[in-house]
View 1 (cartoon, rainbow, N blue to C red):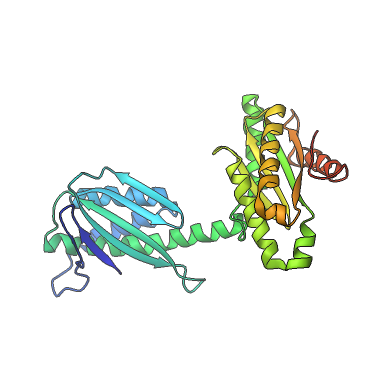
View 2 (cartoon, rainbow, N blue to C red; view 1 turned 60 degrees about the vertical axis):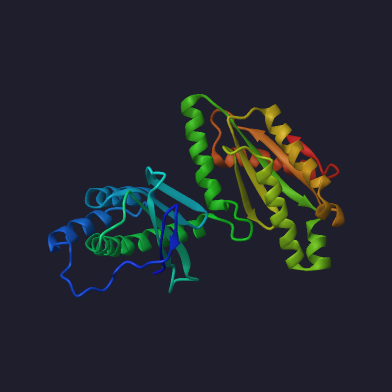
Length: 300
């Protein structure tokens, strides 16, 4: 474990006492209760909040920050002159490449040796549960993310569109669906190889994300097939988003070099739509766009 202790006035490195000849600070009953609480959830936010409540009862801990993957979870309130202790945790091995997470503890005052020992014992219990929760998160991401682009995959799309349909039926709202296919993409793979093809796909994914709002969702189904779910959208708004994305592709140097554009099929949610019916409608529109000159948008 890598541990550092810092304050606004200094940046010195210290270590928590993990080995001590003294008796444990926690009683067996206290350890069991903490372990029971920590093992009750694999939700990282809930687990972190529960851990902070336990810490703040026993130590002058004012806040806790957990950083992992591309996520940051915070609980409590860090004070201006608080002491920060950072502890690194590694997880994912032997199931895959070791992953790194970091806990940043904020304390209102310097910990005594006994308090450090107490923190060491509580952290040891939490770390075991945290590794399980982090590994669960990592595996769930593998199940719902496209590994090349970082977009959602088909399973993630299926879950998202089902939730949107339920919400829109309940609230009498609508949403948009855009289905994309890259024109002339096969020639990139054939002429320059799959590495360059992957470069084109990842750049297109970036353009998709840039062209969407934070409330919208982008997915890759495989190959050069992508789609977007536009929340609380109208047919005209769907077309505007599609135009913005196709124009950004046309203006991008990489796509110009390879003569790659994109065709789009667009549609909006209708009452009584199912996940299958709305996708079939957008996919049919995409087929028409591909066969009417490419670099085209067809709405259905």
